Image (cartoon, rainbow, N blue to C red; front, side, top):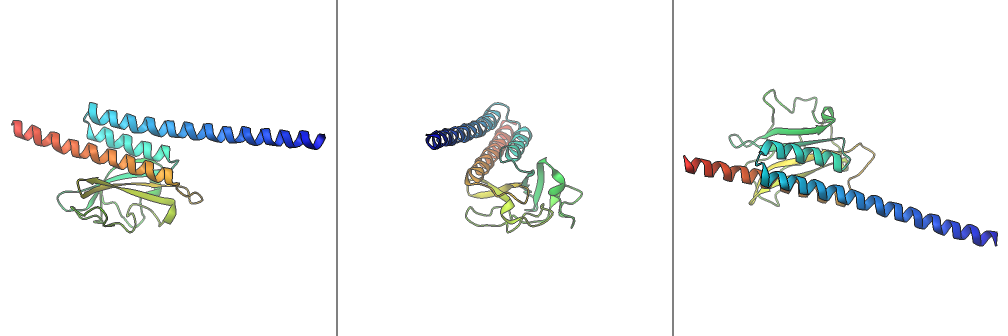
Length: 193
């Protein structure tokens, strides 16, 4: 009788823990959905590229529990990367070998006009040291061209989940949409003049 009681309590405790984990997962998904909605709303309402890229980088860092995030864009004049936004502990992002120059540019790693499917980055030039599975990046793609990347870094003892990778890719897509919209607005403004 005591054994059955203990077994019943253990089953109830297990069920309660499962419900708690499910509830936490639903909360995480709601936060991610809200972040994507907020960025999308910013894209269509404000048309302020800098603000959108700042939001994307901040959400990427916060929502995947990363230590730091960086967003770089391909510089149209020389094809190199320019650091545009950072979030979190930025000291982890800057390599001691001078990867970021005084003008905020990163050495050339992505060539302008590189195509989807081509992997132009074997390692992020911003990371102070190679981190393997502890850092991930998502390309910002407009049409079939890579126009930048969103990079996040975890503490060394934690790996990224598939959900986190998908979220980062979604945020990178949102940033790419904002960049494309910004170019379209500029073209329209030039046409009106």
